[in-house]
View 1 (cartoon, one colour):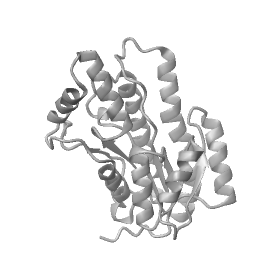
View 2 (cartoon, helix red, strand yellow):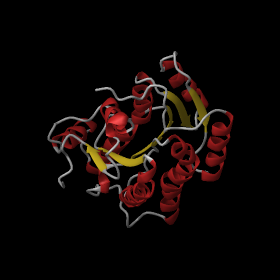
View 3 (cartoon, helix red, strand yellow):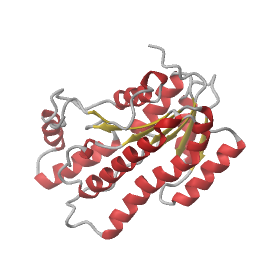
Length: 260
């Protein structure tokens, strides 16, 4: 299948590790000019060096705790360079814990880093997408959109808000050749998963291996995903081949989510 992504421009958030990094690499291998964005410049430089060097790749240093500064940096980059055909929204999840015991600032911080930053980035990139008649916005969220996950109260709450924002945006932008979709990773081999497993181990008194195996046993595939497997789904949704897929939540979870 020809994805027809050659020479498209993509902005990939949280692209110094895990799913974000895997997505940046996957897009670059399809001929996309990738702009990485994260807060650690040294890590950005390291990932940039891993991308195919026959393309026009770059990076932006930005902290997702400040949406207005983020918007300014991306807008300045677009003015000085070019717009983006593809936006991949991806931000590390909030800390775990029961929703009842969460502090108000935990909700505010997560809302800012996820929904507000997604929104200002969409506002920054959509004008170019409209002018090109081609746009792909993919939000990497969580299967908690379909089935809340125990011990991730703040994350469950904010992820649901992002999913509804995304669906609304898909309805508004579909007529311009722009699609907006959500990829919902299940348990994936990232630093975030390692943190969750350690927390489960500490709370239950079982070993890390036992906690990990218990999580795997809840997945029909009996294993965790590789970041590259999530990236493959994201890459497809950014392509011309997915032009009639819009406003969906796509679980990539080995069958773990019990709802349809």
